[in-house]
Length: 190
Image (tube, rainbow, N blue to C red; front, side, top):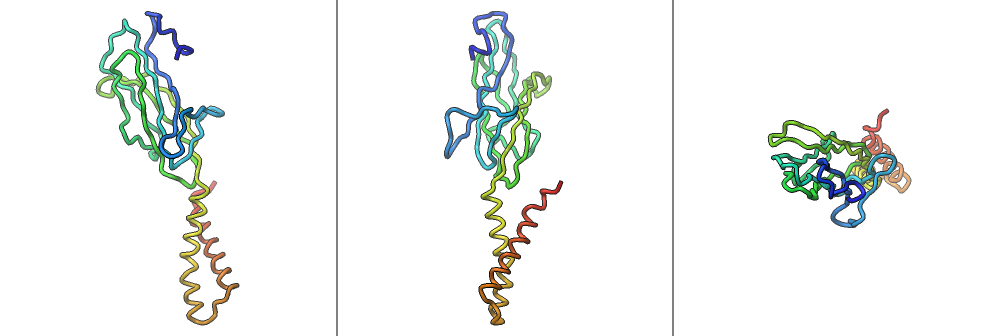
């Protein structure tokens, strides 16, 4: 924090800064993520914490202000709330957030701002750009399950009629997977 602020200066101004974004839970790290090309690159289906330092110099009276966080994308969830009271001169605020696993990657903006006691008087608004990666494994699993489910009834009917062989089974499974690809990736239109 010293690189951001001279804390001994009595004329300091109130400020906050993002310390880091850290993955929590399985496979979590201590170092945190650094932005690349102007945004954080995170995976959907994971849990993260954004850590924010807030500083209010000693001569400044602490009013009933709140540090708030939100997102412009509804799939970004903040399970422990979107606001923290600014109740000390120097503090570290943590905001856990999560995104359900998605097939397709998407951009999001995480907004951090200070408000008055009733959520009014919004000021010091900053936006953190985040790019969430999609899951190729989830896409493959969905295509496989839909393909098998689509081709299964046809295979049962062909077996009942005595006309199912290995070639017909592979063809039906292939066509079922083609139908699954069209189903899973319909949202990827230009």
